[in-house]
Length: 112
Image (cartoon, rainbow, N blue to C red; front, side, top):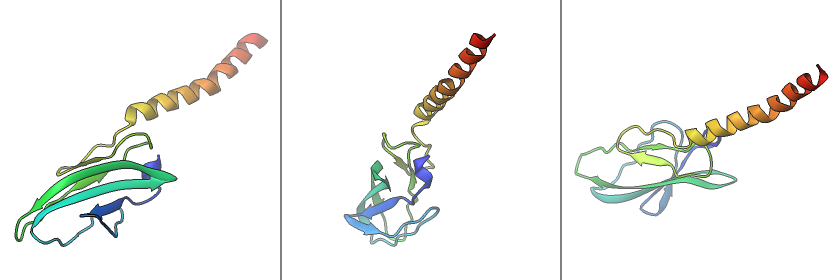
């Protein structure tokens, strides 16, 4: 739910770089670079880090996926990533439905 509110923040070798949803391209000199990505909504969450080794003339696609809630880390890697936190979100949704439905069902049973 929170992963769609703001674009992720990208830090390469300690420097914040502009980022947006979708594909972002950052020209880098050959060598090893440290990439840190996080999401921000009321607080930082979804932190993820990866070391990227760039060779001359090479491109290194890196994929980041923010979690579905603010209480876990993000996913980062060289292939498309899945969002973390699905179990927590499903559990939360079930609990909310039960909180709403149980009093209604009990009220209907009590009035019968």
